[in-house]
Image 1 (cartoon, rainbow, N blue to C red):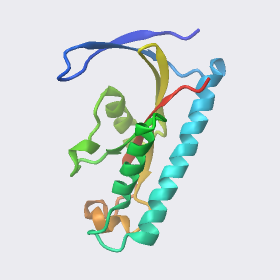
Image 2: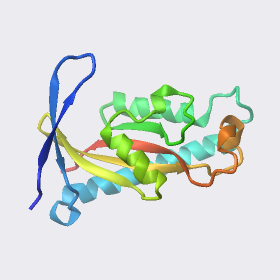
Image 3: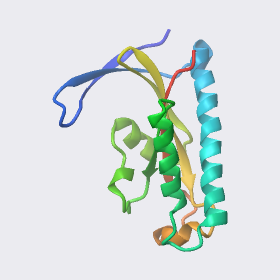
Image 4: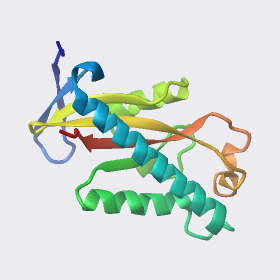
Length: 171
């Protein structure tokens, strides 16, 4: 049996309350979670491969559009088309872009878990009667070119960032 509990969240600046139902992940009991997790991990491989390829083949100096910026443009296009949401999160103490800071309790917990070496971190939430998989996956420094734009990560072998997904559960 899946236990449920409600969280009340005040949406800043909008003045209304949204009720979220958070479910523990019991994939054996819910094939929709398993299918959605598989899709999330496929998307994660796709996005990270694109970012690495852009960095490897097109980024030659910091003044060029960074792979992270290209990735964010891709994420925005997917969200605009109604597929899913994905955000780039900074996990270190030095985050130069405030948009990359964790924005909610899920992302704050994901940050702690991913920095501790756990991967991925996930949760099922219910918003407005629809269930979503929230999943965060780590982003480590994977090549020397990353240091070109992120000098503060030189020598860092751990998780420096994450991708945070919100994906409607597949039926």
